[in-house]
Image (tube, rainbow, N blue to C red; front, side, top):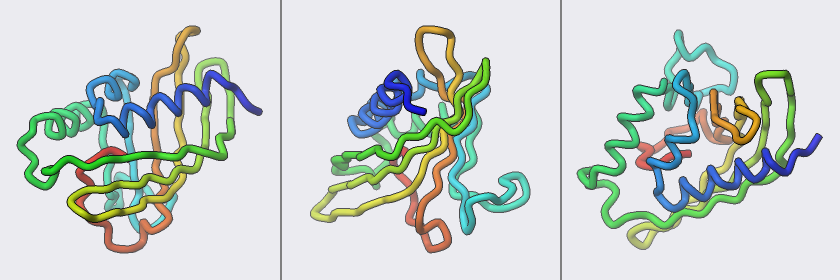
Length: 155
């Protein structure tokens, strides 16, 4: 099943991350948000196993404040980023939530270096009838079983 409103929302999220508009990106999340990037496998228990990132709303706010502070030396010079979001599929739809899976490729250029990140995102979206909010986002990196450098951006 396709929904152009869901697709537009995922494209908006990608653009906000690409442009470093993290405050606006944070506004896309619910108060009970969960942002998770598993390590070593796709379906581990994040409360019992190490994750690359496992943030609630408070940690997301802290992450965004740090990224926007200008104090992260590893972010100088700032990176240029572009995401491609594809294969968008609604995998579940209930009265109060829509689960959407999509593939992404993120290219990053900074300080003469180019990196590529590839994975699958699973969003649980809540709707108020006019717009969506992200309740949960799980990012499954294709190389999450290998050494991952410190993430100084949002996936």
